[in-house]
Amino acid sequence: MEHTSRRGRSRGAWAAIFAVLLTGTATTAFAVPGVTPSPYATALDPGQSVTITKTVETPVIPPNPDIVFLADTTTSMGASIANVQSNAASIVDQVLADQPTAQFAVADYKDVADSSGHFLLRQQLTGDPAAVAAGINAWTPLSGGGSDAPEDWIGALGDIPTAIDFRGDGTPVVVMFGDSTSHDPSAGFSLATATTALQAAGVRVIAIAVPGADGSLWNGLDTAGQATAVTSATGGTLASADPSQVSAAILSALQNLPAEVTHQAVCDPGVSITLTPPSQSVTSGGTVSFDETITLAANAPQGTTLHCEVSFLVNGHLPGPEFVQQVHVEVRDIEPPVVTVSDETVEATGPDGALVDYDANATDNVDGPLVPACAPPSGSLFAIGSTVVTCTAIDAAGNTGSGTGTMTVVDTTPPDVACTEGANPGGTVPRSHNQDGFFALGATDLVDPDPEIHVRDSGSGTLFGPYAAGQQIKYTETPGGKPRSKSMPGDIVHLFGTGDAEVIAVDSFGNTSAAVSCLVPPPPM
Image (cartoon, rainbow, N blue to C red; front, side, top):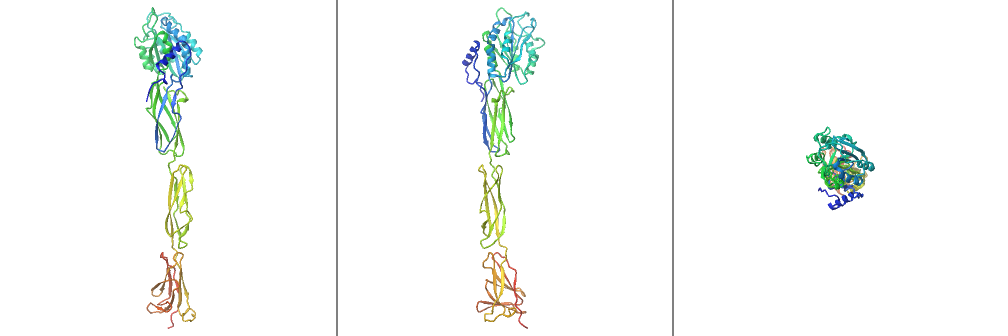
């Protein structure tokens, strides 16, 4: 997933750029780097995740660079210095085109025996191209002492962390070029202590070895492996160039520094982001790809949109807003509404049952209260017995919830019973207290159109019947006698009991009425 292409630039294209630099003509800035895709939006269920490929194209030059140009200004360096001075403006312009926040410092080194000393700061860190050019143009290839090839650039490198006002958020880089080794120790520093000081300050060293002028003292910058050691230890690079190619080599080295890409993610609660691998290294200007996994927690709030901001850092710095990815995750509503239906028990009001009113409610985790649809609806006529009602509600996301309730219609009301005095079929009008004992039995019930009627002898407990409503009876009280019944003309039933006659009725659901007495005086003794 990682490659180090330069936005499609071929070696020939780079050569063309360098050739233009050597002529002192300004070049075109590279395309703006950044992260793709950004922003990214998706919709997930709680607990789900999605993995996408995230590509980061690093800046051609690392972000916010603090670049120190450090030149060997002894006599043998005339041609190399002249090349850089003639192309200084182009180098600075190109760096600023890629990194507008870049700042520059200018210094040079010689031998400690030189009259000007081993280290001279020409220009403190600045963003002013004219000041930088003036500092570079102040380099003078002239020796004032020293009778051997080695110079004292180890001591100069050791001085740089304290001599240069590096920015706290800058990327410090020293670009040095020379043609000789360094004394070691040098101006109070050994190669080891100078390297340690550079590492502590986070300074990368780019070293460019150039050939010296014939007839001068020079022995090659990396003859003793010193340049290799310091560039390797600080994450820099080592290159070689002819005097006429030093400017191109400087720019190429700045555009080919190691770049480590890491990330920082800040997310709303309920969503998280992980990248695999967590970091990658590439040559600056190259691209790296990550597997970015976006995960919703199981309890992520449904119906909301959660956000993450992922910042991609290059060498620990954010190059710019184009390296910030916005992630928007819509949390799908997958939870159906909760529907509750009350259970009701009502008394039947007729043979067909009763009208039943019940409560039905629905609440959704996102939409709040909803109105459920119920079958049969509240207020419907329900038959005697138990009927299950089903109510459903659908939320805005299309989730359907249902609930049930049981409507029970019962008959617990006993019949009404009557024992009405009746006329003697023979035509005799009953005297007071119905001496003849003729009665008509009657019973009505809300549910049962034909409740059973019984006549009970209060003396013996004997139960006669069942009879239908309208049945005519004659009841004779015979204390000491035997309870019995017989038929009389006209479908009249003649009952004999030892006590009073009590009439009761029982409906089809077993509800029994209270007893109604048919008072008949006993016969005279």
